[in-house]
Image (cartoon, rainbow over all chains, first blue to last red; front, side):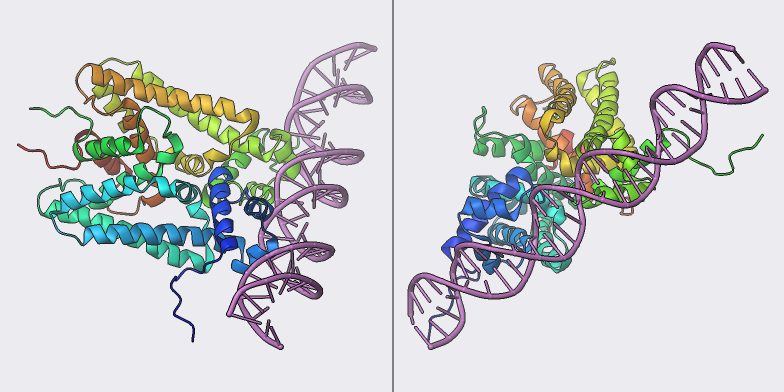
Length: 202
Length: 202
DNA sequence: TCGCACCAACCGACCGCCCGGTATGTTTGG
DNA sequence: CCAAACATACCGGGCGGTCGGTTGGTGCGA
């Protein structure tokens, strides 16, 4: 018989183009403001193809989220389970996040702009995955607090949410054409995150 | 003299109810997902009333932004122009921001969710006001850097955007029913912002 | 003190467009 | 020869927006 399916995500050239087009359009104009006609036109397919691969416009959005979250969670998981003290692993995770941000800039934009629109039965799965990601992050913070590397007078949930907020919003103001590369921005944000704006009293 | 047995609302009150209803609905469901019918139903007016006060659904959204931005800018302006060193004024400004956040929680939610939708000629005015607000903030950061209160190895624009991102995203995860009050959250975020997560080496 | 003209404020039935989605036909790789 | 992978024509609905009509308050001349 046929070999086992290699990818959990269904493949197909047309499908890829649809996802790519939808990601760009959702990011640029927002989910609601993007029509299915725009998507199929940009992907150079027809509505038949689109509704062959996706049962609805919302499932298309959800699948973008799933792919993004799955990859990010996987990478964070690997780093989180690695060796070294918690604060070092956290630093690693953030650096890694910035290093791979260019590849998913559009998907991140979609996420930041339209994540609140996911509803129905799709919502639970996406939300669960999102919480899993956040928990991986937060566990690192809490571990760092226990070992004394991080302050514990600020709740780990505040630390985590604040920092992730800063990251997810980057697309709103950052331009790669500016004075900073994305990697340099990452360095500065990590520095800010770790030591704050106040000049360290020596 | 016959009093008005029918308590018809005074003039202009309908407008306020429309804005209030739209703010809540835009915040809860998003701008695009909210219909004009929902708005007028929630505000207990008719479409005629709504289109008497606003020329379009988008102008209604824009007016929410304008009111929010005008007030926030005004308050920041007052604090920024006040006495004291820059870092103290910045602290004051942030504290003030959190103190008045409850009053505008819904409008802030709308802003965070749908600000990217403002377009056309409305866009320039809103964007200009938004940049004015950010500049007031950023000037304080830069002044603090010059006086040595703040580190200058991180660009002021990075500092400003990162912190404002953290604030604007609060609505996504914070619940007043949780372990923290909004004021306490403000304290923790300011502390985090000033000194970072790293335990200060003593 | 009226009568009357006027107008902002508001009503609500209605419109045309375009959206997401579907039904059915056609190609194509294995 | 049969699904899978598309294409095409089409639909009902609901959307933002419109428009002629209706109020209640107000100023004003006689």
